[in-house]
Length: 444
Image: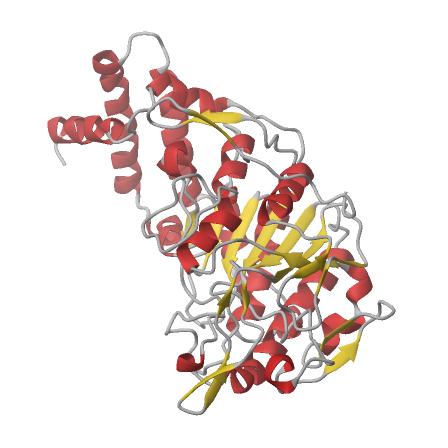
């Protein structure tokens, strides 16, 4: 690319920042808003996991509600999980489960919007969210100019229905879309670390020099001097040995990899631990252990309608992987003394219908916004409890009804993010990070 073409290209890049002024962009990137260093691992159960087959079984309900599986006692007196979660059942005192999450939407996009942004949506909607997802919010409020690793990483498409909205593309996650269990797994952009020649490094430096010239065309206040640092950092992330090491699962002891499980979910959990231990602030994982035998190529996730297959046969394959990966992640974080430094949240957009439905002889459960579960571990929160309860048939909360906004408020509280802080959209309208919701008192 000749210098003139490069200059025009860079101008178009800056024009793509939308309604944000350059000064505002640089101010956002320069702020180190919070001293808290707690990291978040969000294991996103895309599609909506069934409470009945995980953390809120109903053994006393009629069979058309309780399903085919029994329940097993946990290390918490009087608390039972699905019988296919023996490891998590034995260590229930180490984490906390919320059984009373509810929202108005039972549609994927609107339900996800409510859970990951805190702004309620109902009905069938499409497109990116109108407000930033929690990963983008945390990335925005905690970014520092000296960071040498991505602040927000999305594994296996992360929150694929999420987005940065009016915060802008600067706060999008660093994507690692492949399968960490694959023998040839490698984050594509990090291949630059081994591919960059002296010639390519020279081209990179030339681009930065073009920015110096562009400074005279765009701004005379000195703000453009900061652009060089951020552009340099962007390239440095792609060529950083620290980033390469954090993403390289081959550096892990084979015995550790075996403990997590040689399947996608296990290696996702292990990679998430490696990333937060290296200093990444948020790791969002599209966490859908393979129950269909297609390595999740269908992208159905936990969306266990009867048209997608027999939910109980799927769970027989999925839940042992889920149990192994999540229990090992918790044990590993604890053994490394990181239980106050890492917050793990396991959640999806909603639960599944209490009454089992059938299509072509296959049993399944459909979308159900009125009742769902979440698991939380670490972050210095109070562990070893079950918060809230649903009725005998799992239809709705009957005790300590909580909304997704309360879970988000708890996450923000733990990571030191002020949920009342306001950002302006591209039209200048101010919006608080969270419109309502309070940290869950039993946890904080």
